[in-house]
Image (cartoon, rainbow, N blue to C red; front, top):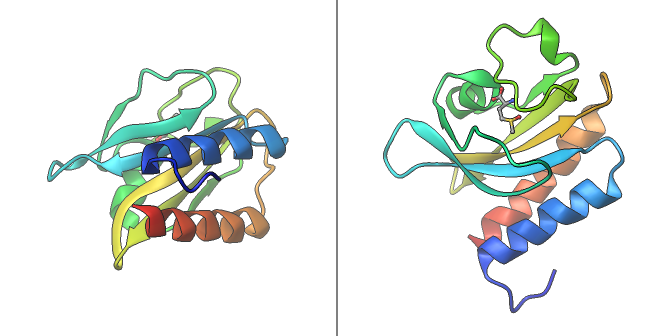
Length: 137
Ligand code: SME
């Protein structure tokens, strides 16, 4: 990632890299807490544009992670009742919170068109990605 880029450009490059290089990552994006509102706002992403650019805390997988501060792995999105569908092709999802100085300020969200593809290795890897992203914010 080019060190001359802005934080947004770096995050976009990370989204594009992850989507391109990891076969089961079909949509990759960052959501961040929207000011002092209890909602998430979509930041940089790679993949099909989504209508869900604002997600209230508690709503969907993303909104639940905003409150739980914990990774959320969804092997089968159809089995979730508190889920916001972005695309009918999506089968599974992983959301990992992003901490800055110990505070949950956002998250990385990955959608996959593959059923049940996410393992502990994805969680560990995405925690590392978020740890690195926090350093550039
Ligand atoms: N599926 C998410 C919404 C965001 S889209 O995946 C991009 C959710 O349930 O929170």
